[in-house]
Image (cartoon, rainbow, N blue to C red):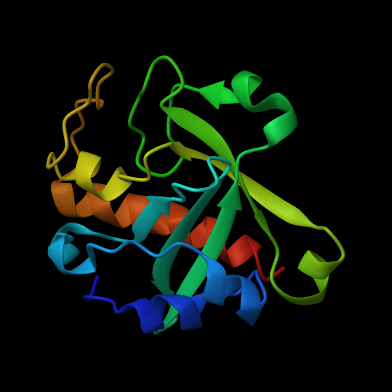
Length: 164
Protein backbone atom coordinates (compact mmCIF):
# COMPACT_ATOMS: atom_id res chain seq x y z
CA UNK A 1 0.00 0.00 0.00
CA UNK A 2 1.24 3.50 -0.68
CA UNK A 3 1.97 5.93 2.13
CA UNK A 4 -1.12 7.87 3.20
CA UNK A 5 -1.64 11.33 4.63
CA UNK A 6 -4.28 12.30 7.15
CA UNK A 7 -6.19 14.07 4.39
CA UNK A 8 -6.04 10.98 2.13
CA UNK A 9 -7.52 8.96 4.97
CA UNK A 10 -10.30 11.41 5.87
CA UNK A 11 -11.34 11.78 2.21
CA UNK A 12 -11.55 8.01 1.68
CA UNK A 13 -14.45 7.08 3.98
CA UNK A 14 -17.50 5.70 2.20
CA UNK A 15 -19.77 4.68 5.07
CA UNK A 16 -19.86 7.78 7.24
CA UNK A 17 -20.60 11.46 6.77
CA UNK A 18 -17.90 14.00 5.94
CA UNK A 19 -18.36 15.44 9.42
CA UNK A 20 -17.82 12.04 11.03
CA UNK A 21 -14.72 11.48 8.88
CA UNK A 22 -13.40 14.88 9.94
CA UNK A 23 -13.80 13.98 13.64
CA UNK A 24 -12.47 10.41 13.67
CA UNK A 25 -9.13 9.66 15.31
CA UNK A 26 -6.45 9.20 12.63
CA UNK A 27 -3.16 7.57 13.70
CA UNK A 28 -0.53 10.20 14.52
CA UNK A 29 2.40 7.99 13.53
CA UNK A 30 1.62 7.59 9.81
CA UNK A 31 5.26 8.17 8.88
CA UNK A 32 6.27 5.14 10.96
CA UNK A 33 3.96 2.57 9.33
CA UNK A 34 5.56 -0.23 7.27
CA UNK A 35 3.64 0.77 4.12
CA UNK A 36 5.34 -1.79 1.87
CA UNK A 37 4.06 -4.56 4.16
CA UNK A 38 0.47 -3.32 4.45
CA UNK A 39 -2.45 -4.43 2.32
CA UNK A 40 -4.64 -2.01 4.26
CA UNK A 41 -4.22 0.49 7.06
CA UNK A 42 -6.23 -0.57 10.08
CA UNK A 43 -6.45 0.95 13.55
CA UNK A 44 -8.56 1.03 16.69
CA UNK A 45 -10.01 4.28 17.99
CA UNK A 46 -8.35 4.92 21.38
CA UNK A 47 -11.25 7.14 22.47
CA UNK A 48 -14.01 4.73 21.46
CA UNK A 49 -13.14 1.08 22.16
CA UNK A 50 -16.05 -0.18 20.05
CA UNK A 51 -14.74 1.53 16.88
CA UNK A 52 -12.07 0.63 14.37
CA UNK A 53 -11.20 1.86 10.91
CA UNK A 54 -9.54 0.54 7.81
CA UNK A 55 -8.41 2.11 4.56
CA UNK A 56 -7.64 0.06 1.47
CA UNK A 57 -7.54 0.45 -2.28
CA UNK A 58 -10.48 -0.64 -4.40
CA UNK A 59 -10.62 -0.24 -8.16
CA UNK A 60 -7.78 2.27 -8.12
CA UNK A 61 -9.08 4.52 -5.36
CA UNK A 62 -8.87 4.65 -1.59
CA UNK A 63 -11.81 3.31 0.40
CA UNK A 64 -12.10 4.01 4.11
CA UNK A 65 -14.48 1.97 6.26
CA UNK A 66 -15.69 2.59 9.79
CA UNK A 67 -16.09 -0.64 11.76
CA UNK A 68 -17.84 -1.39 15.03
CA UNK A 69 -17.86 -4.16 17.57
CA UNK A 70 -21.46 -5.01 18.42
CA UNK A 71 -21.58 -3.58 21.93
CA UNK A 72 -24.56 -5.57 23.22
CA UNK A 73 -22.79 -8.92 22.81
CA UNK A 74 -19.13 -7.93 22.50
CA UNK A 75 -17.87 -10.75 24.73
CA UNK A 76 -19.87 -13.41 22.89
CA UNK A 77 -18.86 -12.62 19.33
CA UNK A 78 -15.33 -13.91 19.23
CA UNK A 79 -13.93 -16.62 17.01
CA UNK A 80 -10.44 -17.89 16.77
CA UNK A 81 -9.89 -17.71 12.98
CA UNK A 82 -9.64 -14.45 11.04
CA UNK A 83 -11.71 -14.56 7.84
CA UNK A 84 -9.21 -12.35 6.00
CA UNK A 85 -5.75 -13.76 6.78
CA UNK A 86 -6.67 -17.14 8.31
CA UNK A 87 -4.63 -16.48 11.45
CA UNK A 88 -5.84 -18.16 14.64
CA UNK A 89 -6.06 -16.17 17.86
CA UNK A 90 -7.42 -18.06 20.88
CA UNK A 91 -9.10 -15.99 23.55
CA UNK A 92 -10.71 -13.18 21.60
CA UNK A 93 -8.03 -12.02 19.18
CA UNK A 94 -10.60 -12.25 16.38
CA UNK A 95 -13.80 -10.23 16.57
CA UNK A 96 -16.89 -9.63 14.51
CA UNK A 97 -16.49 -6.21 12.95
CA UNK A 98 -19.55 -4.66 11.35
CA UNK A 99 -19.63 -1.86 8.83
CA UNK A 100 -22.57 0.26 7.82
CA UNK A 101 -23.16 -0.08 4.07
CA UNK A 102 -22.34 2.83 1.78
CA UNK A 103 -25.04 5.17 0.49
CA UNK A 104 -28.77 4.81 0.97
CA UNK A 105 -28.56 1.24 2.26
CA UNK A 106 -26.28 2.37 5.09
CA UNK A 107 -28.50 5.33 5.95
CA UNK A 108 -31.35 2.81 6.21
CA UNK A 109 -29.34 0.86 8.80
CA UNK A 110 -28.02 -2.00 6.66
CA UNK A 111 -24.60 -3.38 7.53
CA UNK A 112 -22.22 -6.23 6.79
CA UNK A 113 -19.81 -8.02 9.07
CA UNK A 114 -16.57 -9.93 8.99
CA UNK A 115 -14.55 -11.84 11.58
CA UNK A 116 -11.08 -10.36 11.57
CA UNK A 117 -8.00 -9.87 13.73
CA UNK A 118 -9.03 -7.51 16.51
CA UNK A 119 -5.76 -5.59 16.18
CA UNK A 120 -6.24 -5.26 12.38
CA UNK A 121 -2.69 -6.50 11.73
CA UNK A 122 -3.61 -9.16 9.16
CA UNK A 123 -1.00 -7.94 6.65
CA UNK A 124 1.79 -8.25 9.20
CA UNK A 125 0.72 -11.72 10.39
CA UNK A 126 0.64 -13.06 6.82
CA UNK A 127 4.14 -11.74 6.17
CA UNK A 128 5.53 -12.97 9.50
CA UNK A 129 6.30 -9.38 10.54
CA UNK A 130 4.18 -9.59 13.68
CA UNK A 131 4.27 -12.47 16.13
CA UNK A 132 1.26 -13.90 17.86
CA UNK A 133 1.14 -13.82 21.65
CA UNK A 134 -0.64 -17.16 21.40
CA UNK A 135 -2.17 -18.98 18.49
CA UNK A 136 -0.63 -19.88 15.18
CA UNK A 137 -0.72 -19.41 11.48
CA UNK A 138 -1.44 -22.55 9.53
CA UNK A 139 1.52 -24.05 7.77
CA UNK A 140 0.53 -23.70 4.15
CA UNK A 141 1.75 -24.85 0.78
CA UNK A 142 0.75 -21.51 -0.74
CA UNK A 143 3.56 -19.07 -1.45
CA UNK A 144 3.67 -15.80 0.45
CA UNK A 145 2.41 -14.00 -2.66
CA UNK A 146 -0.55 -16.39 -2.88
CA UNK A 147 -1.36 -15.88 0.81
CA UNK A 148 -1.22 -12.11 0.33
CA UNK A 149 -3.49 -12.41 -2.72
CA UNK A 150 -5.97 -14.50 -0.72
CA UNK A 151 -5.99 -11.96 2.13
CA UNK A 152 -6.51 -9.02 -0.23
CA UNK A 153 -9.18 -10.98 -2.10
CA UNK A 154 -11.02 -11.70 1.16
CA UNK A 155 -10.80 -8.01 2.10
CA UNK A 156 -12.03 -6.96 -1.35
CA UNK A 157 -15.00 -9.32 -1.07
CA UNK A 158 -15.92 -7.73 2.27
CA UNK A 159 -15.54 -4.17 0.95
CA UNK A 160 -17.55 -5.03 -2.16
CA UNK A 161 -20.47 -6.00 0.08
CA UNK A 162 -20.64 -2.40 1.30
CA UNK A 163 -21.89 -1.37 -2.15
CA UNK A 164 -24.57 -4.03 -2.79
